[in-house]
Image 1 (cartoon, rainbow over the protein chains, first blue to last red):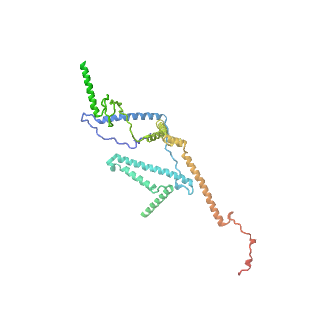
Image 2: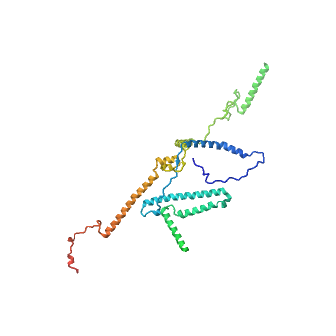
Image 3: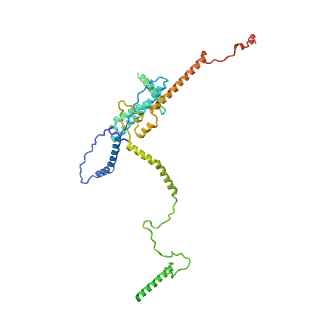
Length: 174
Length: 195
């Protein structure tokens, strides 16, 4: 069964709608709609889902997130050691996937903040905006224009060029 | 009695008159006293009230284009789709309802999970366990292949280097060429140097 969204990720603040005082004797039709919906749709579906979950809880099994050991990086490999290159390349690919997921999560948080705040988004979402800007800039610096055939070697060369530029800029400033 | 017979006779005369007037219009009476001759269009002979069934009405032969091929195609389509579709649907429903997906948990201390225990859906786990190779096995196979190729390439480079040096220095076992015997050389033309 597909899992629900993680409700703990963002604690929605309690709503501040005021309690309305009844001024008419006409009953609220929304109550009728709510009872109809819950009796016709909500209760049977919840009952069946609860039955299924009780059945599945009797014989549960688990899955885990795989933890990979860190291996020497591409910059720590000796030249010509192709086995070290292979392991470093695999580790670099895993790290790139993790970084892509991190950027995706930060983007989702930004979108959720915008949706929540509505017209107040430019004021209240400043932290999420800042975080997204930093994370995307960092991702672009590291993996930015490597292209489809980017691998650990091209990424290392990009880092080397970046450090050279920084050193030149630092020397020019002196 | 006489009045009744006179009424009856009047009724019969009236019926004949009516039949004759209808005969003039073209209908032949039941008695057949005034039949019209000739070949004009006329209504069917006997006037009988016909009763049709209440729900369907008069049975009609409706002329329309054939639906034989269409209905045959749709029947066959449904048959062949459901032949494997229904077992697959039943199997998937059973698996998703009664077996269910796995739950995420932290790896317990000192326990190394099997490679199929990293997947959620039971069918994926089954495929990872019984059909595919473990990713560690694949990794090691790739590394073994790389290792063999690395050794081959190293030996080939060494061989090329040795060949180059032996050809250059001439002090190795390779690059020995058979030269002709020096006793076979004819030096007689060197006796007259100023030719």
